[in-house]
Image 1 (cartoon, rainbow over the protein chains, first blue to last red):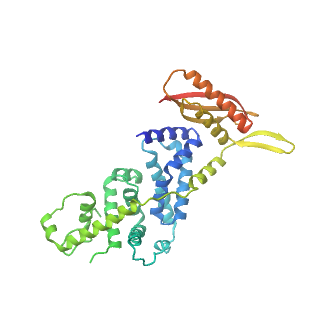
Image 2: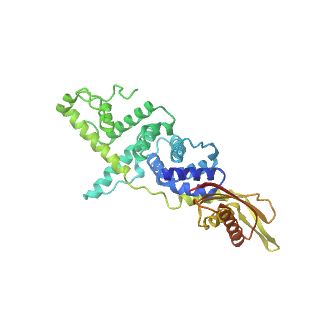
Image 3: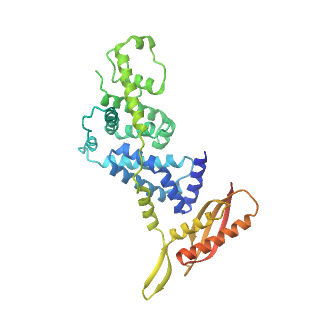
Length: 178
Length: 179
């Protein structure tokens, strides 16, 4: 609650043109914004670009931020849209999963776990962009279904449908069904 | 296609999407007796659980932003701010970015112990050699707000002159809230 009030104060100051206040907001929200972009795009360089551009865009459109949602939610909307645009502009032949080099066959438990998590991250990158956005917001950013619907601007039913289909598809990709 | 659209079924006829929903959101199975005895359902439920566990595992991995992400954003935005001339001589002109003046003013205001939040803006960048600053404050609850405002004004005038060489002609102090 204190954090939320702080954000409101900072957003108010930033809207008047206070860059110091915006600096604090950027530092506070950069990790989740970057993580969202990373899970959406799969490449660290692309994620950094998307996050950076999203913050610049946020600064320029702050007067349109009404404060009826949390600053984080508003940032998620901006960066998600940037990622969806970036994915739409990518050539379809561009392989995504090969951006993660497979680890060598190490029998250690740590390596095995890392390989499983990598398989999940790669699996997420094979999802259609809209399903991917919904799943990433729910599973990796920890938003409720209602919040995901707010970020994506679609109905709650549509969000639930996308997320369940995304989960099913992910399981199909990773575990398969026989 | 709805959530319960008729794709992806197990050999026993169970809708896989319904199983995924059951594991993630917890609605009870439509046919618990069948599920308890069916080898297809049980094997699929185990797969769903293990994959969703891995999803949660990945979600709990710490992801840190690249170290200079915020710095690069801010450098770009500060670079777009107007500049104000400090001095000019035959050997060249000196100017400072308005954002720097605001930053110095904000820190100066925070040096006053009662100030818990300060937001400063430089206004009127054209004024030749002198500038105006507007500062909004949240101040700790207590007496003597006028004294706090006076101290903030003095700190800002002193620090801006010391750091940038600019003369602050006017400091508009607004106390927005008490904490």
